[in-house]
Image (cartoon, rainbow, N blue to C red; front, side):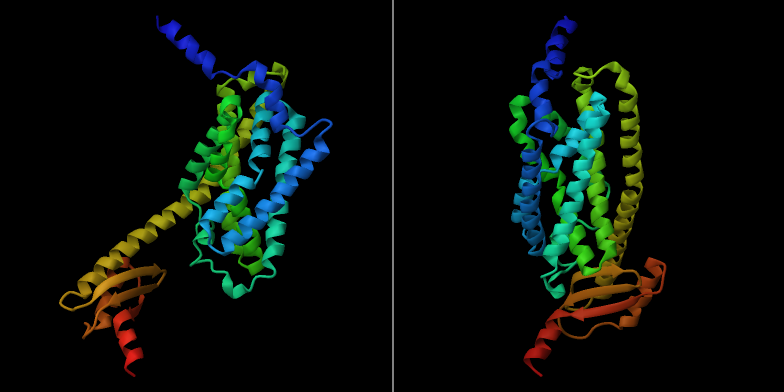
Length: 337
């Protein structure tokens, strides 16, 4: 009885052989229409880069989402994974080359578009669309794995292929590359490397998760002979190794971020204790290495600042400099010189 109930499910999950020609035509740019499809690809990439670059610079989340929907980078990445699963070396190399060309194109265009933007308008701290893409952590890897799996599954099913736009939003391929171009133009190499790490994370995770899903649905049994299984094995080893290597800096960033959050929590508690008995309240506390920036709101006398610095040094296990910022007192001084 259990086998009867499972067989329809397995059949429904498997790749439809009749869909294979459409699937291949959708992913692989080859045949008589190659030139036109390449022109379409790079035209969409140009439009998406223009939208994404200026959307990122203007800190506009809605416009960034629009750029994600326009950008066609997801297709050659899924095509690379599919070619590896099918054991087609030539198709895999062509799809990878198209992806690489797309990456270079986006970075170069974003670099040139940023040329006319005044440096003073580019902020790597206050602009959330930039700052959120230059310090990726393990969450970025997990999101990319889920998005890559979803993208491959959607592509393998003709009846839900229209949902691929949602995956493009989730995995965010073009915006990180635009941040790379923006950062290079601004001379911020650390931000550029962080944004490129985010793209590589999305890229490798999509290949790994997407390839795995395509294997599960049975694409490896379609179209290509079993003799090419060796290429498939090598490809998956590269996917796994690349993803594991990328997880190292992502883990470091995640650990650093957690340490920073813990230190800011400790520092906030110490500032609150220091303010006890006064009318002041804590607005924010930021810990940047040996510098603790405490912003408080209130009026009247404060306890000696040296007491706070000494207690913070004990709790954080290092000497610190306290930068105290008093909001209400500053406003009062401005209004009553």
